[in-house]
Amino acid sequence: MDSLLTASARALAAGDALGALKRIALRDDPPALALRGIAMAQLGEHPRARELLRRAARCFGAHEAVARARCVVAEAEVALAMRDLGGSARAMAVATATLEAHADHANALHARLIAVRRLLLLGRLGEAAIALDGLDPQGLPAALAAVAALSRAELALRTLRTAPAKTALALARQAAERAGVPALQAEVAQAHAALDRPAAGQRLLDGRLRLLRLDEVEAIHASDALVIDACRRGLSAGAAWQPLARRPVLFALAQSLAEAWPGDIDRRDIIARAFRIRRPDETHRARLRVEIGRLRTLVNGLARVEATARGYALTPHGDTPVVVLVPPVEGEQASLLALLADGVAWSTSALALALGTSQRTVQRALADLQAQQRVRSVGRGRTLRWLAPPLAECTTILLLPTALPSA
Image (cartoon, rainbow, N blue to C red; front, side, top):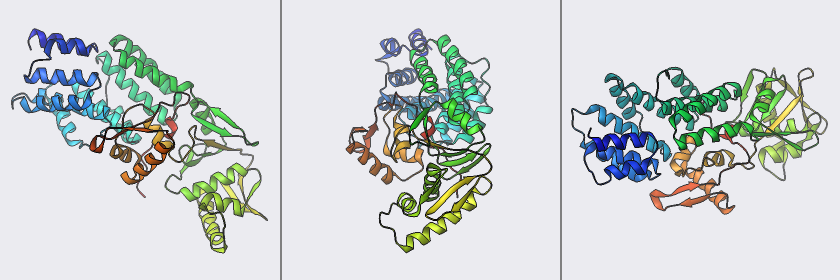
């Protein structure tokens, strides 16, 4: 590598994309193309960066497998920044193996961290945890150490473990300061700020809403209370967790009963909420009895659902209190807004992949949000992307999608 390429690479490592481009902007040899692609990515010109990196990978010869693998890893990082989550993992796996075989451990770990962050975006938290446990961050460059610690912090936050998250964020801050990369420092600061923002609301008996931080939500889940969690769509009591994200009617019944606790709720009201029907008839009452029976089976051991003269009541075992947690963002599109809250432009296909739903469903939801002026679109056709204003007043960590086991 000649002196200009070396100086450009050092500038990129320090986050000085413009300084790097000044040295190699007019060069078309493969190493310069790769460095130009990385520089354009740091400047936010992701489509151009991807084009340059692909050109560089094609131009490297058969004997330059390591250089090609590095281009594949860099392109994967650009795709992650563009929220292009639909690519195949095979190319990354081959590139990672090539880097490991040639003792390029730093770039191999970088590739593994990119894969981890993709898993976190897709809500595949179990796979991300396994991948993180297999990483050894010892002796890494400061920038990679910061990214590894950030990934561990995000996983801890998504699984409501604030103490490990704080420890990981402290390590990430130290590593980011050593790296001296402003963008990395800003990402660490943004993640740390999520700890102090409201993450959920607790519905009180008098109907008022009390905002809770993540550590307060964690404390409620760790208590002996029966928790109806409308953020993650499930019920919990201590260590027991019953997910209901795939059973919206049962969750609507559980939430309605919990909000009426310690009293009962009228049959007409619970039918209107669970089935979205204003004028119920006998068929809806029969369906309600069936769904209540299913709910009784699911919550058996956590609480009882008892019939009353006018409707139904939720009765937890013993003196266990009932706590209802609601999202900090209202509306059925809460998870969609949570993904868009990072300020990055998303395609509808990436949003559908992250949410585990159809692209058409996402398009309808985005159209509704756009009519409410809560999201905006940029580009046209295949380049259409969606943005939302950042929700600086609250954190949407609990609303981010989590991959569910297949039924």
